[in-house]
Image (cartoon, rainbow, N blue to C red):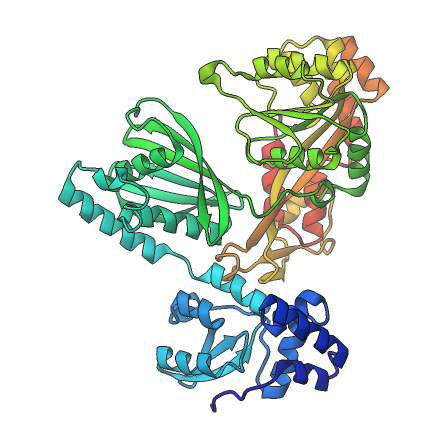
Length: 568
């Protein structure tokens, strides 16, 4: 194929009537002020879309425009071009045909990029246009660091074998450690985890090797296996980064630190625990660049959202969010706080740990080692004249009782509790020893939630339920064959072959009506649960999961998994 011709983008868009001359003049003035490329300036100004620019270039150069969201990339073929060059030239190898490589370029008019790619790939090239945003997303997904992590693990193993128990390199200053294998290995792990949207990194020493696993969309995946000899060096370095006691190996420890991933801050919460073969480490990754979700972006049904927003306007009472660990309870609470965070409201939070810093809110980190417990902080918080109090978790009777008393005395209290569903939550408070009248008078709303995985939009296909799935559908909802737009992901580069990409929450809600208040005061848990389930009937967690599955947003497998969690 001949090399690309130089095209003046602005004139091309005007000629194809996608842009007016006045808009081009405005964009050129903005470009001179910002220094950005013209294409980015035009998109940011809202004059054209990336797809329109790509289409115009494709028509002018008579080459195809490839929508990477609908294109299945071969990771091995893509990685024939080094990641650094792919990012530098905004290029990605798409496929191979007739001895030539087809390369997608965000700017196919870049003659220098074409010449350099030809030199690097040593093959005849055919070109296609791709949008820059889709290109960068694809690069993030495809260029995994597995081989680099494995090589760095081996390098660290060799270094430790030479120095035996000398961890001087691990203990040195950050400046001296820049090129140390242990530092490069950890940085690469964090970068790889960020690329695949992992929420947690698990470092687990076994008898003969070290397992490193990532939790992605709630499911653990083995990232790599390494020599168990490097485990102590990794743990030691992580303890130093988080300010933990490096001499203490017999007791669990918790801490946090920050790492920089391509200019974006990543907040890392670390937990260590002694096991049979060494200290196990779990790190929760919290990106500070994503921002907080708004309450109306959490996926709540419209009727439920309106009731929650109304409850948040009250000046007293308690709202509880329930569910197992990792079900998004903290995200929901923070979204609720963001909804009511105004200058005329004083908000105090009591958390362990503080996951996100919220401007305008007084956040307190519980610290049991110095007796700064939930109970102590909560008692002090009530003397700070708050309007709203968030308690990270109702861990015991004392904390729950203080929170409920605060809710009775003109404070809006938000908190979480580990229960299976909404109907059983007030009963759980009674089991903790809370007086029935206090539960009846203070509790306003209970929101139970779970997270379900979403079908990958790039590889989603219609799914015909199996015989077993039809039998289950018939059992739980009487659904007959042909109803529902069931879908399933085939697995692609975007979802790392899982068929899922991202998660959303499913909900059910219990509102303390007069009948429920009387049942709670009556002291009959069985009658209370019966009335509560009558209120929620038809709008349960399972019903919400089934609606998402019927819309093709999640799978029947996920709905069945939710059902299995709710079985008692």
